[in-house]
Length: 424
Image (cartoon, rainbow, N blue to C red; front, side, top):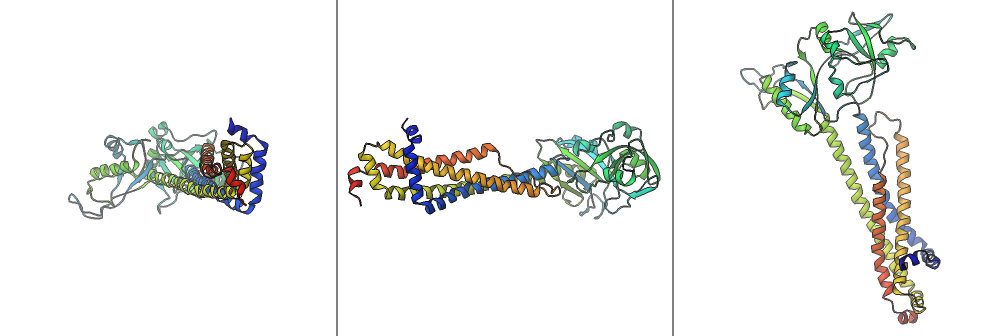
Protein backbone atom coordinates (compact mmCIF):
# COMPACT_ATOMS: atom_id res chain seq x y z
CA UNK A 1 0.00 0.00 0.00
CA UNK A 2 2.85 2.40 0.84
CA UNK A 3 4.41 1.77 -2.55
CA UNK A 4 1.15 2.56 -4.36
CA UNK A 5 0.64 5.63 -2.20
CA UNK A 6 4.10 6.92 -3.15
CA UNK A 7 3.52 6.04 -6.79
CA UNK A 8 0.33 8.08 -7.07
CA UNK A 9 1.36 10.89 -4.74
CA UNK A 10 1.64 14.22 -6.55
CA UNK A 11 4.34 15.48 -4.19
CA UNK A 12 6.48 12.44 -4.93
CA UNK A 13 6.51 13.19 -8.68
CA UNK A 14 7.16 16.87 -8.06
CA UNK A 15 10.23 15.92 -6.04
CA UNK A 16 11.37 13.43 -8.70
CA UNK A 17 11.09 15.98 -11.53
CA UNK A 18 12.67 18.62 -9.31
CA UNK A 19 15.64 16.34 -8.66
CA UNK A 20 15.98 15.54 -12.39
CA UNK A 21 15.82 19.23 -13.38
CA UNK A 22 18.66 20.07 -10.98
CA UNK A 23 20.94 17.58 -12.74
CA UNK A 24 19.72 17.72 -16.35
CA UNK A 25 23.00 17.08 -18.16
CA UNK A 26 24.09 14.30 -15.82
CA UNK A 27 20.67 12.63 -16.01
CA UNK A 28 20.46 12.85 -19.81
CA UNK A 29 23.93 11.33 -20.26
CA UNK A 30 23.11 8.45 -17.92
CA UNK A 31 19.71 7.82 -19.52
CA UNK A 32 21.42 7.66 -22.92
CA UNK A 33 23.62 4.86 -21.55
CA UNK A 34 20.57 2.75 -20.70
CA UNK A 35 18.81 3.76 -23.93
CA UNK A 36 21.85 2.69 -25.95
CA UNK A 37 21.79 -0.76 -24.36
CA UNK A 38 18.26 -1.68 -25.39
CA UNK A 39 18.77 0.04 -28.76
CA UNK A 40 21.78 -2.22 -29.48
CA UNK A 41 19.77 -5.27 -28.45
CA UNK A 42 16.83 -4.41 -30.71
CA UNK A 43 19.00 -3.33 -33.67
CA UNK A 44 21.23 -6.43 -33.62
CA UNK A 45 18.37 -8.87 -32.91
CA UNK A 46 16.27 -7.32 -35.66
CA UNK A 47 19.20 -7.43 -38.09
CA UNK A 48 19.75 -11.13 -37.33
CA UNK A 49 16.05 -11.87 -37.82
CA UNK A 50 16.07 -9.94 -41.11
CA UNK A 51 18.95 -12.11 -42.34
CA UNK A 52 17.12 -15.24 -41.21
CA UNK A 53 13.92 -14.14 -42.99
CA UNK A 54 15.91 -13.25 -46.10
CA UNK A 55 17.44 -16.70 -46.47
CA UNK A 56 14.10 -18.36 -45.75
CA UNK A 57 12.67 -16.33 -48.63
CA UNK A 58 15.57 -17.32 -50.89
CA UNK A 59 14.99 -21.01 -50.09
CA UNK A 60 11.19 -20.89 -49.97
CA UNK A 61 10.84 -22.85 -53.23
CA UNK A 62 13.24 -25.64 -52.25
CA UNK A 63 13.39 -27.99 -49.26
CA UNK A 64 15.65 -26.69 -46.48
CA UNK A 65 17.23 -30.12 -46.03
CA UNK A 66 17.95 -30.80 -49.69
CA UNK A 67 21.18 -31.47 -51.57
CA UNK A 68 22.54 -32.07 -55.07
CA UNK A 69 24.87 -34.98 -55.86
CA UNK A 70 26.66 -35.59 -59.18
CA UNK A 71 29.40 -37.84 -60.58
CA UNK A 72 32.90 -36.67 -61.52
CA UNK A 73 36.19 -38.50 -62.13
CA UNK A 74 38.02 -40.82 -59.80
CA UNK A 75 41.21 -39.56 -58.15
CA UNK A 76 42.36 -42.92 -56.71
CA UNK A 77 42.92 -46.19 -58.66
CA UNK A 78 40.66 -48.94 -57.31
CA UNK A 79 39.53 -52.49 -58.08
CA UNK A 80 41.53 -52.69 -61.31
CA UNK A 81 40.39 -49.29 -62.61
CA UNK A 82 42.88 -46.53 -63.36
CA UNK A 83 42.82 -43.03 -61.95
CA UNK A 84 40.69 -40.45 -63.82
CA UNK A 85 37.84 -42.84 -64.70
CA UNK A 86 34.65 -40.99 -65.65
CA UNK A 87 31.59 -42.09 -63.65
CA UNK A 88 27.93 -41.88 -64.70
CA UNK A 89 24.98 -41.93 -62.34
CA UNK A 90 22.18 -44.29 -63.38
CA UNK A 91 18.44 -44.50 -62.81
CA UNK A 92 19.03 -47.87 -61.18
CA UNK A 93 21.01 -46.11 -58.42
CA UNK A 94 17.78 -44.65 -57.02
CA UNK A 95 16.29 -47.84 -55.56
CA UNK A 96 19.63 -48.90 -54.16
CA UNK A 97 20.07 -45.51 -52.47
CA UNK A 98 16.56 -45.61 -50.98
CA UNK A 99 17.21 -49.03 -49.46
CA UNK A 100 20.66 -48.20 -48.08
CA UNK A 101 20.09 -44.60 -46.93
CA UNK A 102 16.93 -44.35 -44.77
CA UNK A 103 17.40 -40.58 -44.32
CA UNK A 104 16.25 -40.01 -47.93
CA UNK A 105 12.64 -38.82 -48.23
CA UNK A 106 12.59 -37.83 -51.92
CA UNK A 107 15.07 -38.32 -54.75
CA UNK A 108 14.68 -36.87 -58.25
CA UNK A 109 17.07 -37.67 -61.12
CA UNK A 110 17.64 -34.75 -63.49
CA UNK A 111 19.15 -34.16 -66.91
CA UNK A 112 19.57 -30.88 -68.77
CA UNK A 113 20.55 -29.54 -72.17
CA UNK A 114 22.08 -26.06 -72.30
CA UNK A 115 23.70 -25.84 -68.86
CA UNK A 116 27.29 -26.72 -67.97
CA UNK A 117 28.57 -25.66 -71.39
CA UNK A 118 26.30 -27.88 -73.51
CA UNK A 119 24.50 -26.81 -76.68
CA UNK A 120 21.43 -24.74 -75.83
CA UNK A 121 18.32 -26.13 -77.58
CA UNK A 122 16.58 -23.93 -80.16
CA UNK A 123 12.90 -23.38 -79.38
CA UNK A 124 10.51 -22.12 -82.07
CA UNK A 125 6.91 -20.91 -82.02
CA UNK A 126 5.52 -19.67 -85.33
CA UNK A 127 7.89 -16.93 -86.51
CA UNK A 128 9.61 -16.43 -83.16
CA UNK A 129 12.55 -18.41 -81.84
CA UNK A 130 15.21 -18.36 -79.12
CA UNK A 131 17.47 -20.66 -77.12
CA UNK A 132 16.44 -22.04 -73.70
CA UNK A 133 17.68 -24.67 -71.27
CA UNK A 134 15.65 -27.89 -71.40
CA UNK A 135 15.38 -30.14 -68.32
CA UNK A 136 14.27 -33.76 -68.20
CA UNK A 137 12.36 -34.23 -64.93
CA UNK A 138 10.16 -36.53 -62.88
CA UNK A 139 7.09 -35.31 -60.93
CA UNK A 140 9.03 -36.02 -57.67
CA UNK A 141 11.14 -32.97 -58.34
CA UNK A 142 8.29 -30.67 -57.26
CA UNK A 143 8.24 -32.37 -53.85
CA UNK A 144 11.77 -31.06 -53.32
CA UNK A 145 11.69 -27.79 -55.24
CA UNK A 146 8.26 -26.20 -55.53
CA UNK A 147 7.29 -25.00 -58.98
CA UNK A 148 4.59 -22.33 -59.01
CA UNK A 149 2.49 -22.92 -62.09
CA UNK A 150 0.21 -20.17 -63.40
CA UNK A 151 -3.55 -20.81 -63.40
CA UNK A 152 -4.75 -23.16 -66.09
CA UNK A 153 -1.53 -25.14 -66.31
CA UNK A 154 0.18 -28.02 -64.55
CA UNK A 155 3.56 -29.66 -64.09
CA UNK A 156 4.69 -33.03 -65.47
CA UNK A 157 2.78 -36.03 -64.05
CA UNK A 158 3.23 -39.81 -63.95
CA UNK A 159 1.16 -40.35 -67.12
CA UNK A 160 3.51 -38.04 -69.01
CA UNK A 161 6.45 -40.17 -67.85
CA UNK A 162 4.75 -43.50 -68.52
CA UNK A 163 3.59 -42.61 -72.03
CA UNK A 164 6.67 -40.54 -72.92
CA UNK A 165 4.45 -37.66 -73.86
CA UNK A 166 5.85 -34.72 -75.77
CA UNK A 167 4.61 -32.10 -73.36
CA UNK A 168 6.46 -29.24 -71.71
CA UNK A 169 6.27 -26.58 -69.01
CA UNK A 170 7.76 -23.30 -70.18
CA UNK A 171 9.12 -20.33 -68.22
CA UNK A 172 7.41 -16.95 -67.93
CA UNK A 173 10.20 -15.34 -69.99
CA UNK A 174 9.79 -18.02 -72.65
CA UNK A 175 6.08 -17.16 -72.85
CA UNK A 176 6.83 -13.43 -73.13
CA UNK A 177 9.40 -13.94 -75.90
CA UNK A 178 7.64 -16.59 -78.02
CA UNK A 179 3.95 -15.72 -77.62
CA UNK A 180 1.91 -12.58 -78.19
CA UNK A 181 1.01 -10.46 -75.17
CA UNK A 182 -2.60 -11.72 -74.80
CA UNK A 183 -1.96 -15.15 -76.28
CA UNK A 184 -2.61 -18.15 -74.01
CA UNK A 185 0.22 -20.68 -74.51
CA UNK A 186 -1.58 -23.59 -72.77
CA UNK A 187 -2.47 -26.24 -75.33
CA UNK A 188 -0.36 -24.70 -78.09
CA UNK A 189 2.71 -26.28 -79.66
CA UNK A 190 6.34 -25.23 -79.77
CA UNK A 191 9.29 -26.93 -81.47
CA UNK A 192 12.24 -27.96 -79.31
CA UNK A 193 15.17 -29.05 -81.47
CA UNK A 194 12.71 -29.60 -84.37
CA UNK A 195 10.34 -31.79 -82.30
CA UNK A 196 6.84 -30.54 -81.49
CA UNK A 197 5.85 -30.29 -77.80
CA UNK A 198 2.51 -29.23 -76.37
CA UNK A 199 2.65 -26.57 -73.67
CA UNK A 200 0.88 -27.78 -70.49
CA UNK A 201 1.98 -25.07 -68.06
CA UNK A 202 3.91 -21.86 -67.42
CA UNK A 203 6.08 -21.70 -64.31
CA UNK A 204 6.74 -18.57 -62.29
CA UNK A 205 10.41 -17.94 -61.66
CA UNK A 206 11.55 -17.46 -58.07
CA UNK A 207 15.18 -16.43 -57.40
CA UNK A 208 17.21 -18.80 -55.26
CA UNK A 209 16.87 -22.00 -57.30
CA UNK A 210 20.56 -22.31 -58.14
CA UNK A 211 21.40 -22.13 -61.86
CA UNK A 212 17.76 -22.24 -63.03
CA UNK A 213 16.27 -19.24 -64.84
CA UNK A 214 12.94 -17.75 -65.87
CA UNK A 215 13.27 -19.17 -69.40
CA UNK A 216 13.76 -22.86 -68.51
CA UNK A 217 11.65 -25.55 -70.14
CA UNK A 218 10.76 -28.83 -68.39
CA UNK A 219 9.87 -32.02 -70.25
CA UNK A 220 9.24 -35.60 -68.98
CA UNK A 221 12.45 -37.44 -68.13
CA UNK A 222 11.54 -40.44 -70.31
CA UNK A 223 10.83 -38.14 -73.26
CA UNK A 224 14.16 -36.37 -72.75
CA UNK A 225 15.89 -39.76 -72.65
CA UNK A 226 14.25 -40.77 -75.93
CA UNK A 227 14.94 -37.64 -78.00
CA UNK A 228 18.46 -37.03 -76.71
CA UNK A 229 19.42 -40.72 -76.51
CA UNK A 230 20.74 -40.38 -72.95
CA UNK A 231 19.78 -43.91 -71.92
CA UNK A 232 19.60 -44.45 -68.15
CA UNK A 233 22.32 -41.87 -67.48
CA UNK A 234 21.58 -39.17 -64.92
CA UNK A 235 23.53 -35.93 -64.66
CA UNK A 236 22.68 -35.35 -61.01
CA UNK A 237 20.30 -36.28 -58.21
CA UNK A 238 18.26 -33.72 -56.30
CA UNK A 239 17.64 -35.24 -52.88
CA UNK A 240 15.61 -34.21 -49.83
CA UNK A 241 16.25 -35.79 -46.44
CA UNK A 242 13.63 -36.16 -43.70
CA UNK A 243 13.18 -33.15 -41.41
CA UNK A 244 14.77 -34.89 -38.41
CA UNK A 245 17.73 -36.23 -40.40
CA UNK A 246 21.28 -34.89 -40.18
CA UNK A 247 21.81 -33.65 -43.75
CA UNK A 248 25.62 -33.78 -43.43
CA UNK A 249 25.52 -37.44 -42.39
CA UNK A 250 22.93 -38.16 -45.09
CA UNK A 251 25.18 -36.72 -47.81
CA UNK A 252 28.13 -38.74 -46.56
CA UNK A 253 26.05 -41.94 -46.54
CA UNK A 254 24.75 -41.27 -50.06
CA UNK A 255 28.25 -40.82 -51.44
CA UNK A 256 29.44 -43.95 -49.63
CA UNK A 257 26.66 -46.01 -51.23
CA UNK A 258 27.38 -44.52 -54.68
CA UNK A 259 31.05 -45.42 -54.31
CA UNK A 260 30.05 -48.99 -53.57
CA UNK A 261 27.69 -49.14 -56.59
CA UNK A 262 30.20 -47.68 -59.04
CA UNK A 263 33.27 -49.46 -57.61
CA UNK A 264 35.06 -46.37 -56.37
CA UNK A 265 37.62 -46.30 -53.57
CA UNK A 266 36.02 -45.45 -50.18
CA UNK A 267 38.82 -42.90 -49.72
CA UNK A 268 38.16 -41.11 -53.02
CA UNK A 269 36.70 -37.69 -52.14
CA UNK A 270 36.64 -36.39 -55.72
CA UNK A 271 34.64 -39.07 -57.47
CA UNK A 272 31.30 -37.54 -56.46
CA UNK A 273 30.53 -33.88 -56.07
CA UNK A 274 27.78 -32.37 -53.98
CA UNK A 275 26.20 -29.19 -52.74
CA UNK A 276 24.33 -29.46 -49.46
CA UNK A 277 21.68 -26.75 -49.11
CA UNK A 278 20.65 -28.14 -45.73
CA UNK A 279 24.17 -27.68 -44.37
CA UNK A 280 24.30 -24.12 -45.73
CA UNK A 281 20.92 -23.27 -44.23
CA UNK A 282 21.89 -24.74 -40.85
CA UNK A 283 25.01 -22.55 -40.83
CA UNK A 284 22.88 -19.51 -41.61
CA UNK A 285 20.46 -20.37 -38.81
CA UNK A 286 23.40 -20.90 -36.45
CA UNK A 287 24.87 -17.53 -37.44
CA UNK A 288 21.50 -15.86 -36.89
CA UNK A 289 21.16 -17.44 -33.44
CA UNK A 290 24.72 -16.37 -32.61
CA UNK A 291 23.89 -12.80 -33.65
CA UNK A 292 20.78 -12.85 -31.45
CA UNK A 293 22.76 -14.19 -28.48
CA UNK A 294 25.50 -11.61 -29.06
CA UNK A 295 22.93 -8.81 -29.19
CA UNK A 296 21.43 -10.08 -25.93
CA UNK A 297 24.81 -10.20 -24.16
CA UNK A 298 25.98 -6.82 -25.46
CA UNK A 299 22.58 -5.24 -24.85
CA UNK A 300 22.26 -6.50 -21.27
CA UNK A 301 25.87 -5.53 -20.47
CA UNK A 302 25.23 -2.00 -21.78
CA UNK A 303 21.90 -1.81 -19.92
CA UNK A 304 23.58 -2.87 -16.67
CA UNK A 305 26.27 -0.22 -17.16
CA UNK A 306 23.59 2.40 -17.77
CA UNK A 307 21.49 1.29 -14.79
CA UNK A 308 24.58 1.47 -12.56
CA UNK A 309 25.02 5.02 -13.84
CA UNK A 310 21.45 5.80 -12.74
CA UNK A 311 22.27 4.36 -9.31
CA UNK A 312 25.32 6.64 -9.08
CA UNK A 313 23.24 9.67 -10.01
CA UNK A 314 20.73 8.84 -7.30
CA UNK A 315 23.51 8.35 -4.75
CA UNK A 316 24.85 11.81 -5.60
CA UNK A 317 21.30 13.17 -5.54
CA UNK A 318 20.69 11.68 -2.08
CA UNK A 319 23.91 13.24 -0.81
CA UNK A 320 22.92 16.64 -2.23
CA UNK A 321 19.44 16.33 -0.71
CA UNK A 322 20.60 15.26 2.75
CA UNK A 323 19.08 18.29 4.47
CA UNK A 324 15.82 17.99 2.50
CA UNK A 325 15.46 14.32 3.42
CA UNK A 326 16.23 15.13 7.06
CA UNK A 327 13.43 17.70 7.11
CA UNK A 328 11.03 15.16 5.63
CA UNK A 329 11.98 12.59 8.24
CA UNK A 330 11.60 15.20 11.03
CA UNK A 331 8.12 16.04 9.70
CA UNK A 332 7.03 12.41 10.00
CA UNK A 333 8.00 10.72 6.72
CA UNK A 334 8.53 7.02 7.36
CA UNK A 335 11.67 5.19 6.15
CA UNK A 336 9.56 3.16 3.71
CA UNK A 337 8.14 6.34 2.11
CA UNK A 338 11.63 7.75 1.61
CA UNK A 339 12.89 4.42 0.27
CA UNK A 340 9.97 4.00 -2.12
CA UNK A 341 10.43 7.50 -3.51
CA UNK A 342 14.06 6.83 -4.45
CA UNK A 343 13.17 3.46 -5.96
CA UNK A 344 10.32 4.99 -7.99
CA UNK A 345 12.75 7.63 -9.29
CA UNK A 346 15.22 4.89 -10.33
CA UNK A 347 12.54 2.81 -12.07
CA UNK A 348 11.10 5.90 -13.77
CA UNK A 349 14.45 6.89 -15.30
CA UNK A 350 15.14 3.30 -16.38
CA UNK A 351 11.68 2.91 -17.91
CA UNK A 352 11.88 6.19 -19.82
CA UNK A 353 15.32 5.22 -21.17
CA UNK A 354 14.00 1.78 -22.17
CA UNK A 355 10.96 3.14 -24.01
CA UNK A 356 13.07 5.70 -25.88
CA UNK A 357 15.56 2.97 -26.81
CA UNK A 358 12.75 0.72 -28.10
CA UNK A 359 11.28 3.56 -30.18
CA UNK A 360 14.70 4.45 -31.63
CA UNK A 361 15.46 0.77 -32.40
CA UNK A 362 12.05 0.33 -34.06
CA UNK A 363 12.63 3.40 -36.24
CA UNK A 364 16.04 2.14 -37.35
CA UNK A 365 14.63 -1.32 -38.21
CA UNK A 366 11.74 0.32 -40.10
CA UNK A 367 14.30 2.33 -42.08
CA UNK A 368 16.34 -0.77 -42.89
CA UNK A 369 13.18 -2.63 -43.91
CA UNK A 370 12.14 0.20 -46.25
CA UNK A 371 15.63 0.27 -47.80
CA UNK A 372 15.71 -3.50 -48.44
CA UNK A 373 12.03 -4.02 -49.31
CA UNK A 374 12.53 -4.31 -53.08
CA UNK A 375 15.89 -6.11 -53.02
CA UNK A 376 14.64 -9.57 -54.00
CA UNK A 377 18.15 -10.76 -54.90
CA UNK A 378 19.54 -9.78 -51.50
CA UNK A 379 18.85 -12.29 -48.70
CA UNK A 380 17.40 -9.80 -46.23
CA UNK A 381 13.81 -8.88 -45.39
CA UNK A 382 11.51 -7.79 -42.57
CA UNK A 383 13.99 -7.18 -39.69
CA UNK A 384 11.83 -7.45 -36.58
CA UNK A 385 12.07 -8.38 -32.91
CA UNK A 386 9.16 -10.36 -31.38
CA UNK A 387 7.04 -8.33 -28.93
CA UNK A 388 7.62 -10.85 -26.06
CA UNK A 389 11.40 -10.34 -26.45
CA UNK A 390 11.00 -6.56 -26.25
CA UNK A 391 8.72 -6.79 -23.22
CA UNK A 392 11.18 -9.22 -21.62
CA UNK A 393 14.06 -6.77 -22.14
CA UNK A 394 11.94 -3.96 -20.68
CA UNK A 395 11.05 -6.11 -17.67
CA UNK A 396 14.74 -6.86 -17.09
CA UNK A 397 15.47 -3.12 -17.23
CA UNK A 398 12.74 -2.31 -14.69
CA UNK A 399 13.94 -5.15 -12.44
CA UNK A 400 17.53 -3.90 -12.61
CA UNK A 401 16.33 -0.35 -12.02
CA UNK A 402 14.52 -1.49 -8.89
CA UNK A 403 17.56 -3.37 -7.60
CA UNK A 404 19.97 -0.53 -8.26
CA UNK A 405 17.52 1.91 -6.68
CA UNK A 406 17.73 0.01 -3.39
CA UNK A 407 21.31 1.22 -2.83
CA UNK A 408 20.62 4.98 -2.83
CA UNK A 409 17.26 4.31 -1.16
CA UNK A 410 18.98 2.54 1.74
CA UNK A 411 21.48 5.41 1.89
CA UNK A 412 18.58 7.87 2.18
CA UNK A 413 16.88 5.84 4.91
CA UNK A 414 20.11 5.60 6.91
CA UNK A 415 20.31 9.39 7.24
CA UNK A 416 19.39 10.45 10.77
CA UNK A 417 17.12 13.52 10.87
CA UNK A 418 19.20 15.27 13.53
CA UNK A 419 22.45 14.81 11.53
CA UNK A 420 20.79 15.93 8.30
CA UNK A 421 19.45 19.12 9.87
CA UNK A 422 22.96 20.02 11.11
CA UNK A 423 24.43 19.64 7.61
CA UNK A 424 25.19 22.81 5.69
